[in-house]
Image (cartoon, rainbow, N blue to C red; front, side):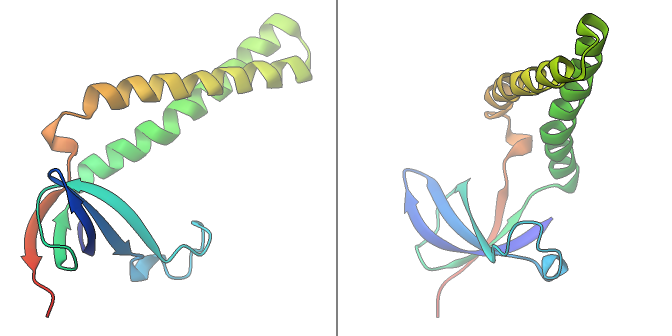
Length: 131
């Protein structure tokens, strides 16, 4: 996935890059009318320059699956376990929400483990100096 963004700050080998929302997202509005996003990327480039950034699509899909599937599975599993144990809808719902809350800790562990892996990092392909 190739995106072009503008470097808004740079320090200690990290860039904060502002990306505009892609045209494909123009009519979705699922993100709540946010037109741009700020992302921290390792690398170096002058502030104000435009950079081309690549993130392999397979890794984007894997990250999205991890972020959405794990909480969903724990929610469903928690509801099923709550129903089997308590036989009450309210307690089953609470059990499901507690299990879904536990997914936050699992996602944090996965994030900590995968953070240093190079395959998950976006790569700067080109730097275009501001004119």
